Length: 330
Ligand code: SF4
Ligand code: SF4
View 1 (cartoon, rainbow, N blue to C red):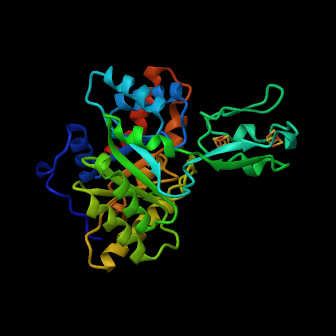
View 2: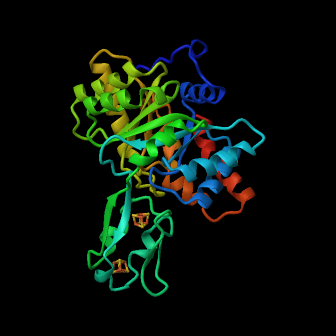
């Protein structure tokens, strides 16, 4: 497969952090920490951001939440080394990355079956079931565990946060998540937020699934037409599904190959493609294979967060460094 070509970076209006990020993508060693589009627990976010920034992460992807962004700004500004690009995630449509759990209290029989599956310990059962809304990032693991259907997922409303998030001085990249991959909705989004999107790196995150090839290409080209900087495609495998299974990243890897082939079949250059959804340390070995050489890097969420969740700061930095090392050594 043809390798994607990368623009001459010296001709672009880039910050130093953006330049470093694009260089990591060009070397196919890009690693992004996904904080989670709905994850708003500031104490945990501070720990994650500091640990992964100290370990040399290229980008940190966060919820469009004022407290989250302020917390990370404080953390990063106190660090001695250059900071990673701060990316904010936004939904273009009812995307699954923007959800929170809801409990129908009257239906809960307090069995506790939902507790152990939650990756962020958002559920506790002192007497009645309690939910930490800031810890919940809407992964949905708890829903099928409930014998009484007391749990459901509701949209995490971020509409009121978009302006503040895009105006934040440290936000230099935006990831637009979409379930429908609709070029007209994307065009309307750019028209609405045009001024605040200037000079930001744009990533488009979606699942390929059954979306027609022509629609995927037009979606990408719509973003390209609105951006002076390179546009990234983050191809999602199984969203928020991270675990230690060596096969967990196969859906994302296969979807990335499929996407690259769509562009090749239309005689178009392959875009900068990264993968997410099911990424773990085994993904680094998969990326060594010839057929995946075009993939510019990964976004890791659940596994990256869980790896350092309860560790002290020095331990967390070491574990984060080890976790990223396989991707940085490609
Ligand atoms: S399992 Fe997922 S959806 Fe359920 S409470 Fe935990 S983070 Fe939220
Ligand atoms: S699994 Fe359902 S019934 Fe059991 S504690 Fe959780 S919400 Fe309540």
